[in-house]
Length: 115
Image (cartoon, rainbow, N blue to C red; front, side, top):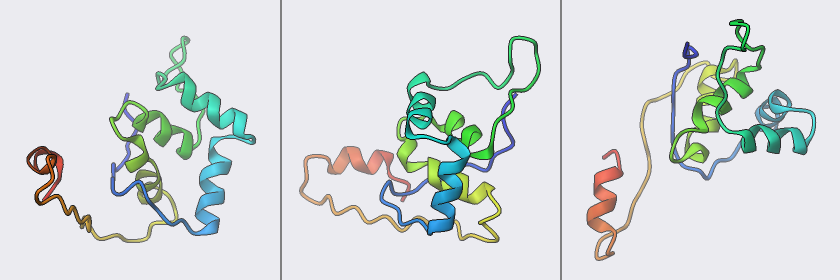
């Protein structure tokens, strides 16, 4: 049972509007300890032992989905935004710039980038 989420990714360096940041935080827990516990326990099954779907917020569902990714920091806020009421439209473009010419990572970085 996978959530019906539109996955999105981008840079781990983001600027968030205050109201969206508050939405993201409130959806994860009331305290920093609660958020840290969600992250520390890792991805959880969406169904409880009794077979019922676990009650979660969108922020918790997105976090649970991206915790298994190699770079959840490049996916969490983007996926949450696209699936929330904060997103009324979006452009599917990646504006990353990788200046790797002459860098020993040049060849390998070209294999994982999406351009």
